[in-house]
Image (cartoon, rainbow, N blue to C red; front, side, top):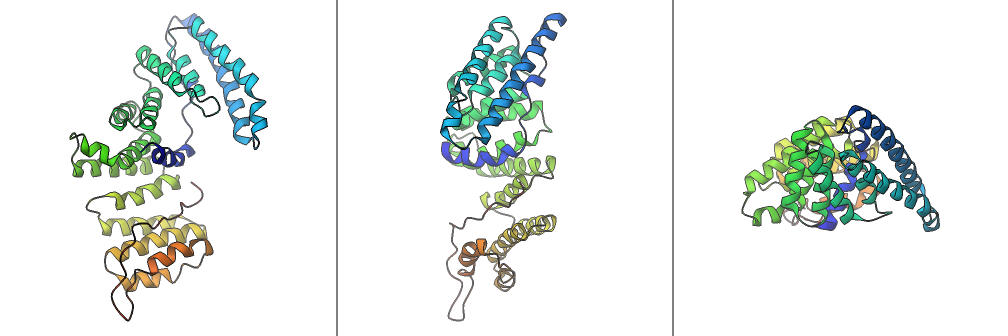
Length: 307
């Protein structure tokens, strides 16, 4: 589950993570003001360094950044000594340590737990702890943190998306626990993706994943799925994007035994990049010699651009 969760989580990164420096700081007003100012400086340096890493194309370029990263780590350590009760300091530092360029995930998790103790009302902390536990293969514990983040910040679409992803990817773990039944699990997963889409109407990645979640249901609502895919196609402008959604429409039509409609729709898909997926669906259409071929469970559709 660990690898697939991380791959699916990539799509959620299109929404910016809330800035840890924006979290309220605890303590006397004078100390709070100074702590806030110093933390903002650290967070600004952190963003600048991570931006350079994102743009680096060679390993040597990243290696050259190790000294400034180490300086930043040292300054964070000093900050925590100076302000040991400021939860936002632990959160910001944890976000830095959890990045691949440093890769100190266990240390980051310990800092997040400390931040959670100091201020249990930070949704970002709950979310980050959920990420850590999900990647560690502990989905049931992760779900509790995601749910806590959603309770604190119900309008943050990313938290709903991550909960839906966790419930989908760790499906078997939740069922084996005995704490979930299939209908409830399906409903929670589907609703989480729906909420993410509603709260972030411009995010194509979230909208696409909500559509895919119809396939994850034990008893899919194919009529609802077809209506949804058709509505999503109308919202897109790119030719490849629209034809990608059209493949989903054809797929659903096949599941509804509407081969003639599916055939007509597939005939409109002419983008070269989509021909492999189109052929897999076409092979399921009935022929003059006999009924449709066996449905293929391995069709993988490209995610539309612009997410």
